[in-house]
Image (cartoon, rainbow, N blue to C red; front, side, top):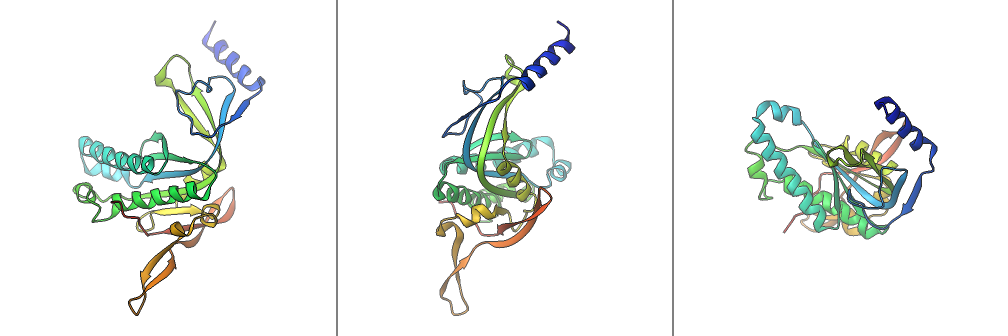
Length: 247
C-alpha cells in the first residue's frame, strides 16, 4: 500500500467512525490501555494549572546551553514536586510550559490547585525561598500561571508502535482558558485564575491577612479583578502577587 493510501484510509476511518468517550475519576497517562489510536477518549473534571516561563529566548541568548538546561531542570523539578504534594498530576512538558491537573469536583481540590500555584510562585520567585539564590546566578525567573476548572477530554494521538511518535492531547475550554489567563500574568502578578475558580475558592485560598495602619491584622482579598479576551469576548479573571510559603 502506498503512503498516500495508508494515510487516506486512516483519516477516513477516524472521520467515519463513532467517537467513544468514557467518564473517569482520574487523570489519564500515556500507558492507559483504554486510550488507543482509534476514536476513544477519557473525560474527567479537574482544575487546570498552566505555567509558562517568560523570556526564555533572551535567557538562551545570554547563557550557554548547559546553563539553560540547568535552569529548566530546576524550574520543572520545583513545579512537579509542589504539584504532586498537593494532589496534582503533571502532564504535557512542552518547551517552557507545563500542564498540571488537579482532578476532582470539590472546592478543596480547586483550592489546592491555587495553593500549589502560590507555592510555585514562592519557591521560584521569592528571595527567601532557598532556591531563588541559585537560579538568580543566571537570571531571575519570570513566568505566568493560569488556572481554570472544567471537563477535559484526553485522547491518544500519533502512530502506534513507536513511543517517540505518540502523545496525549487535552481538549477543553478550561485548558485553553488557563493558557489565555497565563498569558496575562508575569512578575509581580505571577498568578491568574478564572472567575469560576475565584467564585469557588475556600476562604483560606481567597483571603489573607495584612497589617493595617494601626499594626493590627486585617483580612483582605488576595485577588484583584481584571479582564481578558476569550472567544472574542471580554471576561473577568483575578490576579495576585501573593505567595504561599513552603516549609
